[in-house]
Length: 113
Image 1: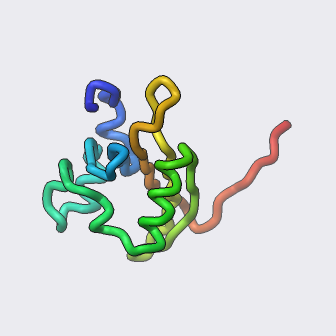
Image 2: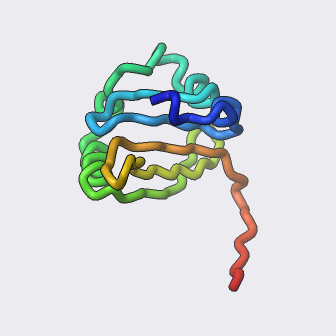
């Protein structure tokens, strides 16, 4: 799996976590590892154990449909945007990628045509 992850992803200023179709974590960049450091090394573990039933249902749906999910959260005083998307090879869903980034509480929004 890591052969598909470019080197620049490791030091991005956002957390990137990639799992396979069964939910087993294949890759975490440095920011993701730091975010979940209290849980130890998560690579090779199933992410379903870290989620409630509602979240598990969303993850299963994304893996079945090849879809995406986007939302914002606030945690420990930081506002974050979470973007989850199925990743594919030759059109076949192979797993899920989650990108989590800290965003300002107020953000400009531009409409471009």
